[in-house]
Length: 255
Image 1 (cartoon, rainbow, N blue to C red):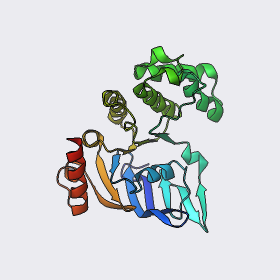
Image 2: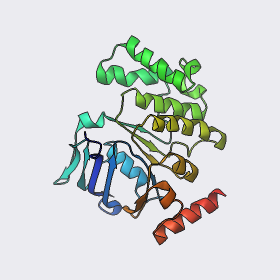
Image 3: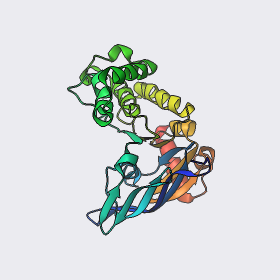
Image 4: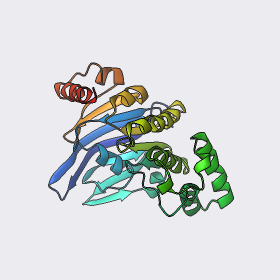
């Protein structure tokens, strides 16, 4: 895929619940392979729904999503078509870990490669241990989720998503459920991925993190893109009054 071609193209995306609660109202976004897009905005503005749509977890009312030049998600006559092969190219980490409590850390990591790819256990465990070592969790391989801190659980969740070699990573408020002293260890892992040029879309309320990791910041409100630009512009000198009010309010709350 040429460097100039979009990795993700979202066109005219509409999503409602019960046809009444309109969450996305004509969203248009393009991102290139090298982009690290941070999505900010008020609660209920469609940020998490956008990630869930990109992961193929939500049906859409209308619009389309293409990935690496291929049709990925489309809506026709009230039905949503999702290309399962493309979906396997995308990894997502949720706010609340979603680890399997009955499996060890190692078991959580090897399950998907063995089930989805038919990978041999020995090969999957070798790759899993390499990731756990990289994230400072090798000594926790035989532990169970209940024995881990929140920060450790989230790092395991990130490692698990990477086991399927995603071409795009989605992070949905992955530090918001953590105690403040645990936030940095998770953010450092994501910063590592950014340094390795992993394309990612991140929903966060942490403006410091957004400023440090984003190549682009998108401010969404009312189900549409209100402002889109480099972090120093959107976070430092927003053009729109709506964006400016949101940034000032968030920074005031944080301080």
